[in-house]
Length: 327
Image (cartoon, rainbow, N blue to C red; front, top):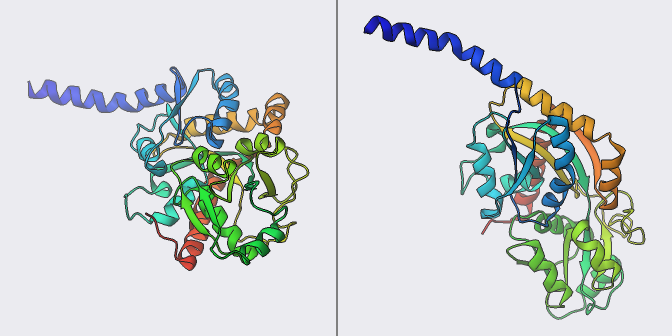
């Protein structure tokens, strides 16, 4: 019996590399889950639904978006970090990943994207828009800053929550124009933008996808976009720098990228990275993204890892300097 057991164990050890090689060469042979940390309709979910068919076509397998909102993104991020690194659970993330890591510094979770994820590829970037309620008597950033200094109480600004992209980008904006304002965190971007439209909160920063229709129909005023050039989606809205803001120390746009659990086999990683690179050259996809003011921006895996590390460092310095604390 002992000899049989030893032989079985030896045979298993011998066959494991072949089994792993077969799994890698046959990848993918079942549907792939693309995890999004926020609710349907948000910026990341919007991008995901624009690319899943092209991603599925390139991989030869269906790709399914799975929204896992909660805990400011950590519910989804921890789920992916704990998943099997086999290429069937991927994360479509945004710069909230870097911002949250800089804000929380492992105080509430041992999660660390730099050690628990492998970057596959950067996909795209997209600006946010500074939105002001119609009951605020201003039509430019300069007028907003001047107005904020004449009112008896500080103006409020809404965000999708403490540590959200909209929160921290607004803090960068405040710093860049020398304006003070009180943060009002909400449980999501939809709620925050609704209260600005209703006039309950004076201003917010939100994705251009969620803001474009509101600005065009006059429900809110768009005073500036966070990109370095004017947005084709809102060509009459100046950039924030054009409107008088000092050049920011970090990228104020949304950026989106694919990550996988650490340990993803290199052949699978390379295959997905190559599919992303190829699909972003397709004119049909580029046209769809352009209509939403999403710019394809392919970033190879190693450069994505460096970008994530650099942004965590930059946001950590900014957050610490401003004394911003998680709640």
